Image (cartoon, rainbow, N blue to C red; front, side):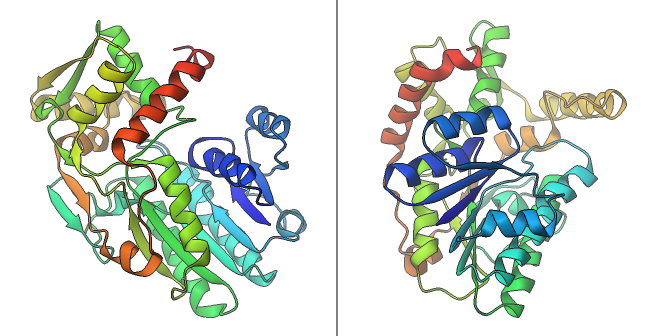
Length: 336
């Protein structure tokens, strides 16, 4: 049986559905009981658990009969309090991974992030050995600490193979963050979307089902415990090109990209962040979010190719078509 954490949103939900559709035995967990009920209606066993504060008995029951863990759960946001990221991304990972090792789980696949590479400069073909000298936010710092937890457990527990994946720029079904926010901005501006460099930053993106495929590869590949791999669609492109295909060509929306100076958007983000420290509300713009739209970032894929045997099963064009189809069918349920 495969345990999928974070199964009530994004990557984890896609993983749970695709595993079930393939006939694999799967157990899903997450904190959103409403989305958990939807998983149950789809025939997927679901256990509501907050991994950060679950006791040993709860973790033992969650892992009973499990041979593989796909740990997708995380607090993923460019803004928030350090202790919240520490609880969700470090403490929860440590407790679950340690419990899995003690219970004899054979493979633990941990989803990390390429945010640890970001340093407000252009980066091309970034290898897994790179790390920014100064991690850009609490999210990136907490995910790096979670990786160090996994590496430590890999050294101490030889019976469990730990594998870490760093997928870049996920898009696809069950996205409740990125595309809704883009559509919100466009709706407020009559179809205009302000982007630094007019969206010409060259970036890697990854269709979510390709990440699920990468997790399958990481489950079976004979690799050293503690290994880490970049995962992308292996088709670097500009954000303007991708958004044009998805929003204008596939969804028929009146997209007009407005090029704004990076300095202006960065200044606006600094002001919004300062206000957010007082109001405790997440700002619409953050320095990291603006920087991620300004600077090129592509990742080296050689290690994933050679060691995992990972190659995308859906190219960018197919991923965009599938994403658009899902949004046409389900977007209304998100108020879009």
